[in-house]
Length: 307
Image (cartoon, rainbow, N blue to C red; front, side, top):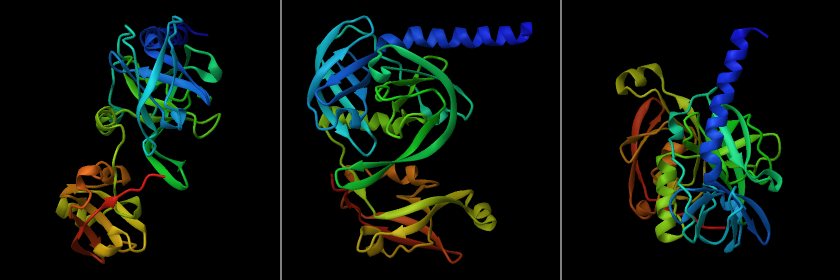
C-alpha cells in the first residue's frame, strides 16, 4: 500500500472515529414490551426515534452508552414520516446537533450510530448511495409511502432503527430505519419538514395531514415552458383517486403539476411539504400543464385518515 493510500485511510478513520465519539453519547437504546430500537437525544428531555419502533407502545426504558437508564413515555408518533418523539426525565446528555439532509450529495460520507441486534453504541460508516428514495410502509390497514428517504451503504440492521445517521461534522442528517430489511440502509431525512413534524408532535402529539388523492412522478417540463417559466421540472400525475379532492377539482391523469399554493413543485415531497393540517378544508390553487396549456384549478384537501 502506498503512503498516499495509507494517508487517505488514516484521514477516513480519523473522521469516522471523531464522529463516533461525538454522536455515540447522544444515541440511546430503547426497550419496549414488544421489542427494541434506538433513539437520538435532541433536547434536555426528549429523544427522536422511528414510529415503527414505538408501534402501539406508550412507555419503556432508555439506556445510554454509559449504562445510565431512565424510563420514557411516548409523546407522539407520525407513521407517515416514520418519526416519533419520546420524553424522559432530565438525562444530562448533550443534545445532538441536527443538520439538514437537503444539503446531502450522493457519495458523501455518513456514519450510523445505533443499537443493531441490541448491541448498543455500535458504529458503521459508508456513503450516501442515493437520495429521494420512496419507502412503502403499512399504516394500519392502509399502505403509505415515506418520501425522500436517504439510501446508504452503511450497514443497518434491526435495532438500528431510530438511531443517528450523521455527516462528517457530526450533525445528525437522518434517523436510520431498518424497515426495508437487512442489507439495505435507509434513513428518514432530517430537514426543515422533519423539524416541523417534531415541533408538531411535541405540541399536539400527532401530525394532521391534508389529502389530495393523487399519485405522481417527477417529470421534466417541455423546453419552451421551462424557458418561459424558469422552472425545469414538475410532478406528472399518474393516478387520481376517484371522488377525492383532486378528482373533484378536475385534475386528470397526465396533468403536469407546476405549482401548488403558488409555490413550484418538482416532486412528491414538494407537495407533501404543503399538506399539513392548516390547509385542510382550504381551497389550494394548483397550476398544471395540460395539452400544452396552463390550467388553474382549486382543490380543497380533506384530512388524511389515520389507519
